[in-house]
Every structure is written in structure tokens, then in C-alpha cells.
Amino acid sequence: MKKIFLASLGVSLAILISCSDNTEEPEIDCTQSDIAVIVSGQTEPDCDTEGMIEVTGSGGTAPYEFSIDNITFQSSTTFTDVAAGNYTITIRDTNGCSSTVTTSLSAGPDGITVTLETSDAECGNASGSITASAVGGDSNYTFALDGGTAQASGDFTNVSNGSHSVVVTDGTGCTVTKDVIVSSGTSWARDIKPIIDSNCAVSGCHNGDNTSIPNWTVFSNVQSRASDIKARTGDRSMPRAGSGLTLTDDEIELIACWVDDGANNN
Image 1 (spheres, helix red, strand yellow):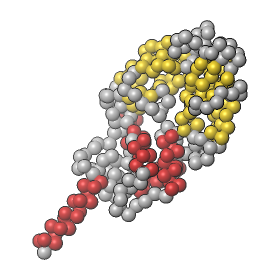
Image 2 (cartoon, rainbow, N blue to C red; image 1 turned 30 degrees about the horizontal axis):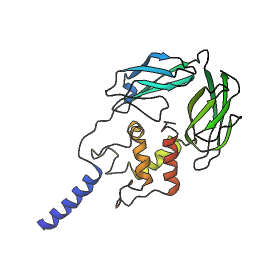
Image 3 (cartoon, rainbow, N blue to C red; image 1 turned 180 degrees about the horizontal axis):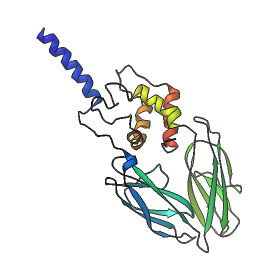
Image 4 (tube, rainbow, N blue to C red; image 1 turned 45 degrees about the horizontal axis):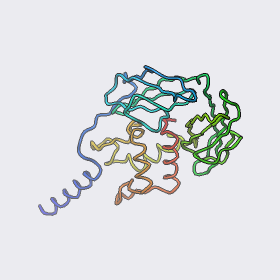
């Protein structure tokens, strides 16, 4: 009887360890965080000088990461090669708590100001659009999307969701590159949270009831690890093999679209 009991205990421990490293992670209430970011310096761009934005973070729990597009984060507080336009800078601390500040750069006397407008692309369907317009510099503009062939029109159709780059060149050869996100409209509350709740934040594994980490019932934990979740669900290593849980191809695609949209709390 003792051998049977010990064997059963060993199986139980193995199951628990497979979902947890047995380290308690206290839940963080980001609504109470004092994390903040300010713009501490900037340089206006023109054809010979790239724009620059410098920020300073405070509060929260260091170290910080910063993003100018809410997708790619960096430890540096300086953003270089920034075109004229409006920007929202995001700071994120080690707990996944975040804050934003907005700023704008105007083109210098020889520079180009580029404005981009987008329409959503349905998840898994390149049905979005980008419309680019420009002022300043020499008005004989050409427009190129994602390294493609330059064209006289700033209209781009059949665009997939995610991050894209538009290069505008004027008649003198002055170029401006501006990044934009085309959203799929995938919703955290409507589309992604039910998938996480049913397949990842389940009893005994990543729902906070057995000290397993990360706790996927806390949105900031999911958001801060969004890229890893996309990769692991994409290669089907999440949910864990042997858990009895699995994701459909449509669910994996929705997660990828949500992450590519910026992993927003929408």
C-alpha cells in the first residue's frame, strides 16, 4: 500500500511541476502603479537629419522597456530615425504595468511630413488598406510599401494585419520612412480571453490556484508575454502535450492576429 501511495504522489507532483516552478508570484494591480514616462528631448527631422525622441521613465518597478509602436520594445530611452508625425510612446516595467505619453515631430524646412490612414484587415485575410499622403519637400512624391516597388499613388490595398513600413521619396531624393499597424480588429475580451481561460488558465495550471506562474488570469501577464504565447501556440507547444487540451487552427490564428495588432486590452 505504501508503494502505491508513493507512486500516486509522484505522479501528482510531476503534474504539478509540469505547470509550475513552485515559485509564488504575487498578483500585480497595475491600476495602482505610479509608472510614468515623459519626453525629455527631441530633434525635428529634415532631409539631412533624422528625427529623434528621448524619454525618461519613473515609478513602477525597474528595469523599464520603451516602445514607439506598442509592438517592439527596447531598453534604450532614445528613438532614432523618427519621421515627422504624431507618436505615442509606451513605457513598460518588469511587472508588465505600462503608461504612455504622446508627442509630435514637425518636418524641418527641407523635410517631408507623412500622414498614414488605415482600414482593418480581417484576421487571416489581406483585406486592409493604407493611404499615405505627404507635404513638404519637393512634391513629386513616390510611395513604397514594405520594400516593394515605388508608385506615384499613396494608396495600398490587399494589406494584411500587423506592422508595415511606408517609404516616401520626393523629387530631390529625400526619403521618409514611417511605420504603421493595420489592425485585424481581434478583441482580447471577445476573442482571446475565452481561448486562454479554456485552454491555458485552467485548474491546476496557470490560473493562480497552485502558485503556478505566469498566472494567465491577469491580463498584464498575458500582454507582457504575448510574443511568446504567439510562438508557443503557433508551434503547438502550448497547451502542453499530454494536458488533454488543444487549440484549433482558427484559435491559433486569432492569437497571432491579436499579438500582431499590438496585444491590446480591447
